[in-house]
Amino acid sequence: MIRRDFFKRILLIQRNVSARYSSSDLNQINIQKLEAEQSTEVVDEALQQREAELEQKRNKSRLKDNHRRILNDEDPFPEPELWYQGTLKYVRRSYGRYGASSGIDPAYCWPIKQELMDAIEYEQIKYPYTIGEMAEKAKLKRAEKEQSIMNRQRDISKKLEKLEQWKLELQQKIIKKETEANEAKARRERLIEEVRRHFGYAVDPKDEKFKELLEKREKEQRKEMKEARKKAKEERATKKLLQSTKTNVKQEEPDDTKQEKLE
Amino acid sequence: MSKNTEKALNILRALPRVCLANIRDNPGSRLGPKRGRAQHGGDKHGAGNKGSGQRQNYMRLGYETGNNPFYLRFPQENYYKGHHLKRQYPPLSMLELQKLIDTNRIDVSKPIDLVSILNTGLYRLFPDQHQFGVNLTDEGADIFCAKINLEVQWASEIVIAAVEKAGGVITTAYYDPYSLQAMVNTTKFFQRGVPIPRRMIPPPDAIEYYTDPAKRGYLADPEKVSEERLVLAQKYGYNLPKIENDSEYDMLTERKDPRQIFYGLHPGWVVNLRDKIILKPKDEELLEYYAS
Image (cartoon, rainbow over all chains, first blue to last red; front, side):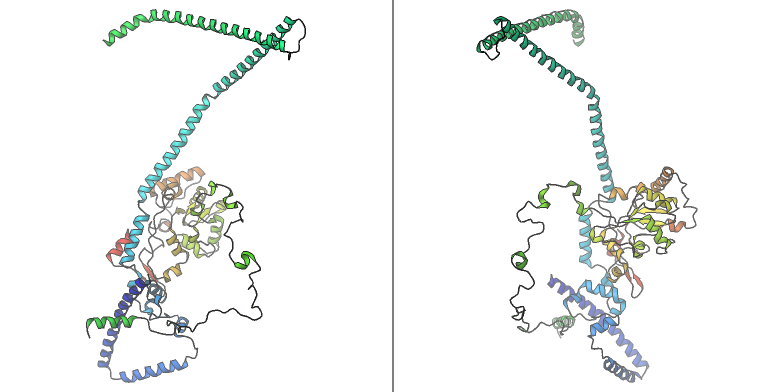
């Protein structure tokens, strides 16, 4: 990292130096021209030197050079002193703050080739879709969501239609269960009564004899009920048979026509 | 002098000059801090007595010394799912906007965007805290009466109706955090000496809003937007002022390019405040990059 920075800096400074060289060349040319034109050049130089000396003597602030330059709103480090002062970021910032007086070529403000390539690659990865594609996707997503909501609503309303019927069924089921329970209770009571009548007096229901007889009677009753059920079943079966034979006789004719058609 | 010698000399010339600021100390010249043996020599140095206080090995945040920590006690809070990634739009009410206009902090004769609102100094934005711009709220919508060309990042239907009823236009526009950072402090940005960036396209979850003409999105079809203006006027029952006949027609119809951040400045330009100049790139590659 640091090494890369270092090389970047070196490259940069070389460029800088070359830029500066070119500008100083220009100055030299100018001076030569001036020299050719005027002969009072030497006097001026001496004056300048004296002025600079005087200026140095007048400066009693004891400020460091860079601090003094900051005070005068100048670039504090026209020549890099520390490693970061040659980095692109620093150079751009110096130009941004001190403009052309910093002596930096404004061409450094724009991304170099590597930076540009990185930026393009980054954008390609971060923004893989165009606005149109994304809008289309969002539209589809929205439509899907709405569709799923609609489907659910339809399901619910369909189920709600059957709600009344289900309520009735439940009610009937409850009633049926109740009546069955009542019947069973009545039956058992009847049995107990019968057994009591058999003994002829009020027997304790916990008595062994009473229990035996009760069991016997219960068995008999169960047998009777079973038979009754069997009988009912048989009756239903015969009824069904009769009905089916009747319908068969009726349906024979249209069946024939169908077969003919098929042939 | 050979070529290599010249090259080496060149590099040497470019290296930083050795000075007091960048030379290393003599080895052993710096002594490490010594523990004093005077008045407070044997003290605990203000760190208390015993325990993690003295040893300064504090427990991690949320740890409850063996209890089931509060932050883990409840298995999920879906209401807050992804809250740290959501885009935030700090509110600015229409009443405040009206006040800014009435106190001459905002120039009505120019299009108003986030930069002009931020430059009033009465609205602050922190892009690094997931803040993405102004949410113009409807407080004071019924007394809003400025005819402006406004660009905000989020606006409700009532706000849109209020601005359009007053004869103005409103657009909702997205800026990515990098562009926002440039807008928050323009001076500081220009002093960085980098070109104005391109505005990025909105993320997939914001594209629906910014392409919606009913929301006056900046990516919506202008014809549909004008249709929606009429629809909204009928919905809220006001006569839509005709912009075509307005004396400030040019100002009211001025819009930024979807890639543009500042009015009048294009991406890729460098603004130097010291020299008061604008520099434009000439390189083909750069031009292509900034134009796309």
